[in-house]
Image (tube, rainbow over all chains, first blue to last red; front, side, top):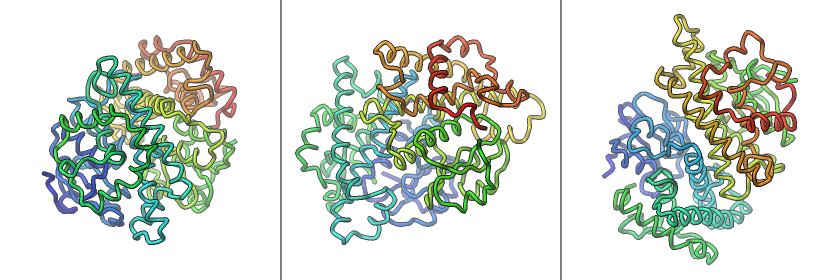
Length: 257
Length: 255
């Protein structure tokens, strides 16, 4: 179970602390937790309220979204790549970043396709915003997030084909690996990319409630657009198999948030 | 010619503003300005003092490093990938990021091998610090930067082999492209990776004074004393740097 603490305790604490979006399977936070869990680094967490300003946490961390991760008295970090680099430094073993530069480049690059600006998470987020924004009745928090992430009707409309192209690239990589007898996205061992993929697949094919116990209100939001036949066709069975296998082997079950 | 404005002016303005390390071919800054120049985006510039406290910059951008890039009222950014994404958004043509997801992934991943934490720039910086920090009475500015980038003797010792591996990976990629008849690192066209390579290669093989007018007194800082790095620098990489520099960079580089 996540050890939830007050923000003051997290700010004033030592060791590894996080500020995590509470109550939602935010894939950036789920991945950050999984990385530190796999490495056996204990942490405590304070909640980040989705869609809210989170003034104190933002002023302390300089970040405008969760997760925020801080190690001892270092500066808090918030970007997925900074969090991964911190994890590799705090606990080098097991390594989740390949040592070979070309393999590492592919791993980091495909992770950008999932976690980065214009990545799969970015595009699906635009799609999730769309019905609420276009209804003209979006809650203030959604409006704030939509502005932050550059929402427009055109960007949301363009998101679908981009997500599909990204899923095709991921399934092609995975098929090449499986054909070579390798059961991970890159190389012969688990990397952060496998963990990012599991975390973000909830935006493509939501895990059942017993594995991802998010309230129905949020599950409905996550399911936005999942009934698009083009998206469904892009979800190659190998992606689901890989998600399920990595989840059962390396994630807390059920997911915690 | 770069015309450095007072930082307060740059902060006050709208449009595209850059804060660059002044007087030094910082590869992150050289790459950023070249990306905007290729896209035809006009910008104004203020100076960051290498090793200085840059208090006004820190108060505004939350960061004591260059480049810092700001667009209108948006928060200033400093990471190489944020700057690239901003450039793509402001001026999508010519695109410097491939459309194909796999090409894009490889381009971003190899760019991270140059620009990112643990990348070639990071590793060479540790080696540069070592010469000064392991000597008595290291300058305060260098000590400050060494602390910021977590300098250690062990890290500096490991940097040579890591840099050599990164150079070898880039040579492998470029040779594969040339074999397929493609003159760039990725795909059929120029990408940001080609620009990053030119900018960062100054840390391995500094351009001559007429192309990169760094004062003679400072040029030894860039010298490579590590045989493994020199051995890894395949001629194909030098030829690529020279070709892309002449075709796409301001000549001479502006510092």
